[in-house]
Image 1 (cartoon, one colour):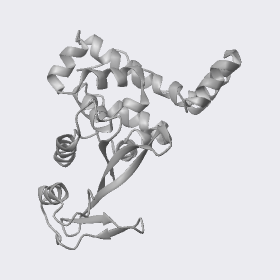
Image 2 (cartoon, one colour; image 1 turned 90 degrees about the vertical axis):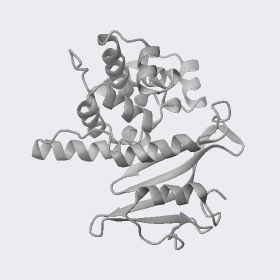
Image 3 (cartoon, one colour; image 1 turned 120 degrees about the vertical axis):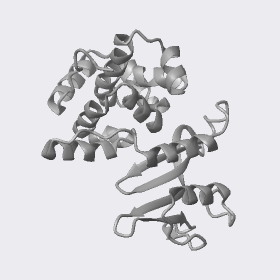
Length: 251
């Protein structure tokens, strides 16, 4: 699926200019609400390119939210969250999957490269590296890898029912040759702010072509998980995390 007219990615100067204009005309009560709800108006401006691009891709294909959800198995409210720029409801795995479905990976990598801080919160740092490599070598962004598909499927299988997710959810991020799985919970006495609690981390060692698994001890540092020695199978890693025979990961 191809977008007929590419959405402009705003530069830092353009974002700053729009932010100044917006704050200049915004009444004080509205500014106070932004602070109380921990909303960064600059992030909202930067997200406009994402929201318009994804909505435009769907509409050009004459597809409803239900159509896209049926083909991608992504819940409709998650697709709507991306199209509306609702940062608290956007999940990195679904953003990447939807980007691939719309054939937007190359555009998204350029957006991530120009909005690295926000991209980090959206789990798009790996796309930044792809963009940098593409700039230098003319490479195209690769589709969602088999590795990420395995991790995404594992995380989805562990997530609680939707009505429980505001209190407990599970996510993941991929950085370089490592991935981390974590729980997402509201902060104690600050339920409007979520926090990540590390569950497990694994790193792929290119030179040996195997995986190393880590768990976080009480000192809040990653330690090698000795019961499972180096393995070439990612599925072995995910099975060990899921079964957790020594209660190292899920407590």
